[in-house]
Amino acid sequence: MRISLTKNVLAGLLFVGFGLFGLWLSHSLDMGTADAMGSGYFPRMVCSLLIVCGGVLAVLALVWPDERPEGWHWRPLVCVTLASLAFALLLRPLGLVAALAVTILLGALSGPLLPPLKLAFLVVVLIAVNVGIFVLALGMPIPLWPALT
Image 1 (cartoon, rainbow, N blue to C red):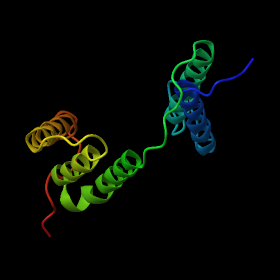
Image 2 (cartoon, helix red, strand yellow):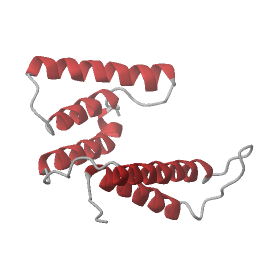
Image 3 (cartoon, helix red, strand yellow):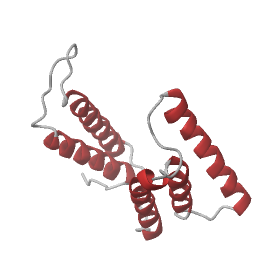
Image 4 (cartoon, rainbow, N blue to C red):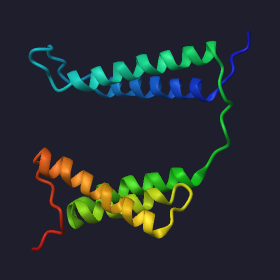
């Protein structure tokens, strides 16, 4: 029997790897109980679920093989990584609106380029949705604009 490393087998193994890494990182956190959750309860539950889902995905892909993995694409990796870093670094000094605009624009460069009008619409809609959810609905104290000092 030959094991074929298809997309879903590799994705399942990646999920299992991230889950195991997360369990290792959270090993020193207090677990607590379901009634009195400690700081390690939620991370361990999420990592355990990630391991189970990854294992199921990998096993199912071994039973029913799917597509072979494609070649490596650098542009999406670089653009999405830069977008994540930009959000983390720009949120405090520029506020949520500008940080999201830069993040969305960098993320949009990872795939086929959108026409400018569609990209502007996407930026406006995603900013409105994020502000609506995190600032208005959840009441999180996230600054919308640059802090004036």
